[in-house]
Amino acid sequence: MKNKLCQSCGIPLTDENKGLNADKSQNREYCHYCFHNGEFTEPKLSLDLQIKKLTEMAVSKLNLSEKEALNMANETLPKLKRWK
Ligand SMILES: [Zn+2]
Image (cartoon, rainbow, N blue to C red; front, side, top):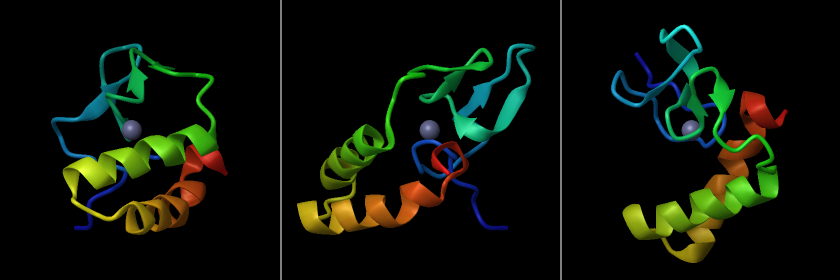
């Protein structure tokens, strides 16, 4: 089965990093960085800012070049549920 992506930041969701709903059940669409206790951790986050954050993360964690990382963020994020 293909890993689902967090529908806010685009990281792959695992059983360990899913966000929690208000009733403490696991949310199936958002990771715990983005979503906690039934709310977005940064409700005012914009798509532009999320693209910047994912780009920086991909450069430092995945060793992508800035351009590759930006391309990836631009391809991935606008398709996610939070940003549609
Ligand atoms: Zn996330």
